[in-house]
Length: 499
Image 1 (cartoon, rainbow, N blue to C red):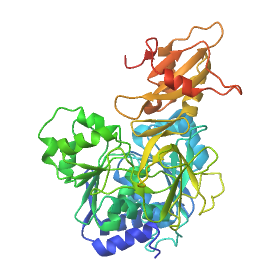
Image 2: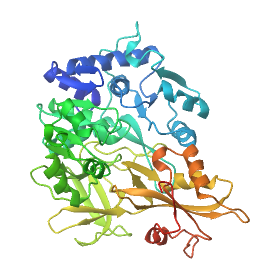
Image 3: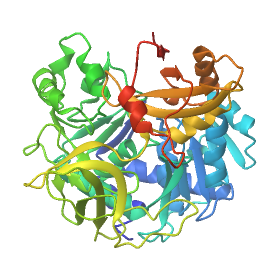
Image 4: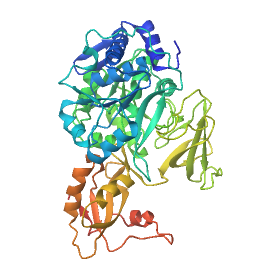
């Protein structure tokens, strides 16, 4: 069995660590051997329903064991799992389904109405009402996995674009295996570790904790959601030695009243991409946790990173073995150290990067990949994130396409023009702001615009700030000068949805 595939990784881990506890999700607790058996059973259940290698299986599921069963079961069968953001509804859900064309869709009972509204025509299984994926009796046993190759697509993960709709990233089997090896090394994970994540499994960060644990024989505890007030108590209950934080989560945790739970846990390091450098010391002093940063995206891997014993607050780290990274200008020419520019990356590891987007040809494996991130490299090879090159907005750990926000706002009958852009948030990352121009002869109510967005967009993408303006600043070629809007930011006349 190929070790650079998900079934190969799972099979090797089950053979080596069979009786060790691998997974805890809610009341479900499984060893490595039991997890392998669940993957085999799920693959058989899918096959009994007509699923074949190469078919796409979408999942509109929160952090629950059925989603993990689908991820591993699809990999075992050779099918492609498509985990969807549970905040999607309406236009954005329809777009994701139209783009990925899944033959099957698993959805939580409370979310099933959204699927009916968008007119999905494939097979729908309602988890919580129908049988869960592993509960089919009499299904064909698929004891031996499909002979997938390292470059075959294992999952399609949607990531927000900056100038168009969200795009489905084709993630091959080997990409997950390399994620597991690279992050496990960066965090210095061992079989004695327990990994605790409450991040959503439809994103790369949480999904890859499974691969990290399998790589070293560790245990992973998947929680339902983030709670700032109960985070450390939950980490303690999990027995966590390693935690996973996004930059916006850290200020929320530090804003909580101090208490005994702050230090009652066993966690001593955490992956914390995007955490402001000035907060690293506070996290270490108050919670006893050393933060490790890095650069990785749905399209790539852990290209840049640090380790607990060698990390710098506010720095992503240095280039890891098997990867290359450069900082370039608009002409893709390398810039001197200390000069901001766009980060481009490449790898010589076998299928460590995605094979491109749905509908696009696969890129040259040895080609430089543009990241859209502005960074600075210092003379010692450490990289520091500056901002996004284009107009992606990052809020509460979610990448938000300004294009999708603008599309939703523009459908309001009183809106003539709109521009969406990020403004600083007190919780790190961004808040969403829109500048809107009313239609001629119309009076535009910002609160109505916000209510319209609540109906059309996921909660994390709904603008907090609305500015009603007479005109948008334009370039000579008619493009919106968003830099002017960002610099102006929130003013005294800006409507604040939280105000």
